[in-house]
Image (cartoon, rainbow, N blue to C red; front, side):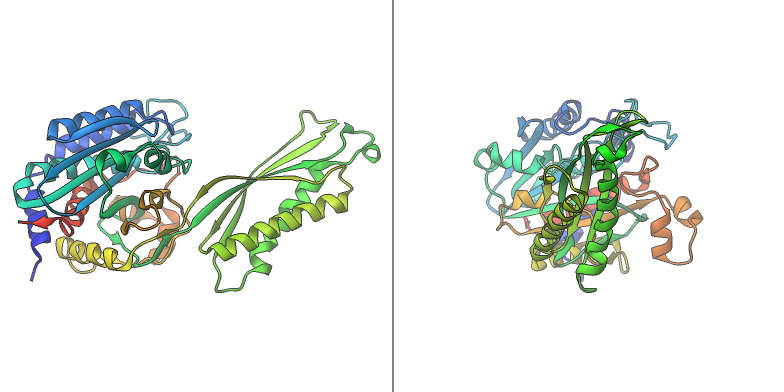
Amino acid sequence: MTSAAARTALDLTAGLPEADLEDFYRDLHRHPELSLHEHRTAGRLAGRLGEAGFETAEGIGGTGVAGVLRNGDGPTVLLRADMDALPVQEETELPYASGTDGVMHACGHDLHVTWLTGAAEALAAGRETWHGTLLVVGQPAEETGAGAARMVADGLYERFGRPDVLLGQHAAPGPAGLYAHAPGLIMSASTDVDIVVYGRGGHGSRPESTVDPVVTAAYLVTRLQTVVSRELAAREAAVLTVGRIEAGTRHNIIPSEARIALNLRTQSAQVRERMLAAIRRVAEGECLAAGCPRPPEITLGDSFPATVNDADTDATVAAVHGEVFGAGTVFDPGPAMGSEDFPELALGSIPYSYWFVTTTPAEVWEKAPGTDFEERFAAVPSNHSPHFAPDLSTVVPGVRTLVSGALAFLSVA
């Protein structure tokens, strides 16, 4: 038997303005904006929310948008989409490719805003079918890990009310038409680490009079590769990536310092602390062995929390998605190593569900090399790729996921 939430969601999304939403998506994709510069995107979202009957506000936490629709007694449900693009040069050759040099919606946040807009409009148009409060949030600066916390600190809940449940979703590679749910950990924590190796510079012809930080940095990069493979148990998951190494100005100058940028992904606080301790130990040890004139400088940068779904909340959303989209469309992928700042909206206690919507066009998936899901998944363009291009066929389903998820908690008439 289909639930009232699923039946109502299908009714409210039966006549979605598909062409209008696709045009809205194309427009957002053509005009990407980096973190905390999402002025145009925020304005377009706020405009659509206002036209739908939401009380709206812009500039929350910098460039954040919120819209609230109070519709009688009942729970308060928050729907969230992130809005920022990435410093990536687009290579999709789409007719609606980015018109901003070096900036691209390479992570699907333009699709997220489109989904959110469509869901907000559908729920507003069908407000006679449900009771409660709908809080819609367009969040800036997800890519830096700062946006959600900035909105909360700027009084999001004081102005619009504290929600009872949070719902969010993300575009992901995979054959379009699947919905990935996990009843606990679904995304990992992330920590950036910056290391400065100090040497003693000099002429390239007289290395004996210097302490070469480039050589030390090279040893350090190599040594760091053993932290995960030799210091963690096989059951513990972590990723340590050296994303940048910089040193020197000319061929024949041994520089005075080298800089290394690391990214650490972990799925537990204990593993994170052990890995940070190992990074410090390895860096200090290599610099000591090289005779560096001073210890390395180690600084922690941007950080994302782990995304851990409330099991009951996610089970409720997964169940209604299964009803709406049919058997075999909902699956548990296990935790991913990607990271999100969505949990910052939960304040440590508000239950939430966060899931993935697969968006790879069918023709791209079918042509991908490999004989099974995992091989093709690794081969198709992923988030942050200059070739990432979600299928427009996912615009309407992505609206339905949010509408049905919200109705699973709102009081359906």
